Image (tube, protein in one colour):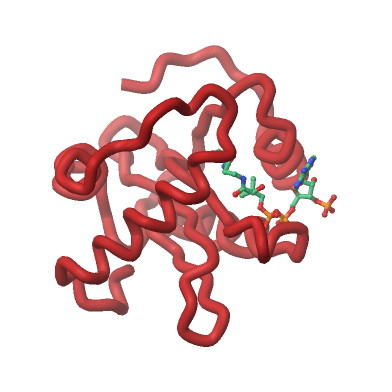
Length: 140
Ligand SMILES: CC(C)(COP(=O)(O)OP(=O)(O)OC[C@H]1O[C@@H](n2cnc3c(N)ncnc32)[C@H](O)[C@@H]1OP(=O)(O)O)[C@@H](O)C(=O)NCCC(=O)NCCS
């Protein structure tokens, strides 16, 4: 996202991709409005466009992996990872999350944290493949 203009059209593309992919998260419920998304996901102290990876198929936005900067607390945090259903099972999420792990280096921390719904088999499989281990913590 840091390589793109942070203009309203770009933020809307991120929002629409996030909304589409979030529909497949178990019990996700209704998604933010655009204004809520901007307030709660973009205009926050932990949002860093360097940590938001977009996967493109030509010009189509097909995947996103957002990692936020909580380095003041000693870690970065994987927010939403999503790939359009048409492009799943091709390793796109792994590729994006590896770049998210590199973002931890940029933030000079060695921990990456995330959480997932206990029934979200694809997210759990993805995180296990990347070496994430279970932990008991509360994310602020
Ligand atoms: C989770 C998600 C991002 C995975 O994207 P993807 O690009 O298809 O994932 P990859 O192709 O990189 O798969 C990587 C690994 O994830 C796991 N995985 C992916 N899909 C899976 C599924 N349906 N069931 C179990 N494990 C799965 C596997 O371990 C896979 O490795 P493998 O191919 O060697 O078996 C995608 O399914 C998605 O957008 N889901 C809806 C949104 C969501 O739930 N996001 C996570 C919560 S933030």
